[in-house]
Image (tube, rainbow, N blue to C red; front, side, top):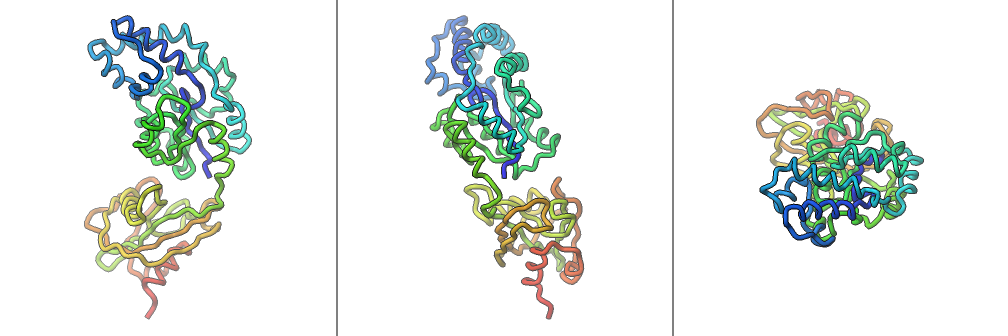
Length: 341
């Protein structure tokens, strides 16, 4: 279930294209450039917006452009309007217990004026605004608020938002209500594309832990010993490294990626062993249905470097592993691979 939503502001929750285009054309006109139509603006505009201005006015200092844009924007930002269904969407998120955060490049002063006018500030646990490059901020937000990546999505309307979600390891939900068209967004390969806040609400209403989540994991060997790791999410029990398969990712590719991220190890001689169902295990930290694809593999040379998901690791013999406090799926895999003689 998606329990946490990081939300862009412009083009995702509100329609601010008219004043943004107006202020942009004010700047372009000041420097003798022709105005952009709405379609031209949507085709060329991108984040970080420094890249956009580098294309159209490379000779003008960014500070000058920024000051001129915002001096005009404050005069016309009353044109900013909530997208259809915004309040209903936010109310649904609140009543369903979802945590909401803003992550936007909108200037703090402009955000405060707009959110006060619309009466929306109380819906957001924390607004992160004025962020030039969201990719550099998302990891800090996840860590600060203890957000599980598998339960979190970033909702935005631009390629930069899709890239930010991918950078943070969370689901990307692309909105077609704002700055980037479907033609621009499709090559970025967002996980989900929705046409409105109504459709996003419908998606969330049917997003529950009812469908199995495909995951991969491996019993990793080196020099006759097996790698065991201990994690909080499995109630402190010992198990194997692994994780969820991402959309469009082959299972073995997912295994190699997850093991590398979790342990710093690269794998060779990967071999599929078995599939397991794990439904609402009491050992896992929350109710969930996982389809576990289990492998064996050998680790290439190198030191184990655990990421934040694991607490401890040990290299042990198969007999020593069998005596450890293993989670049940790991024990079944161990018994399938190393049956007592």
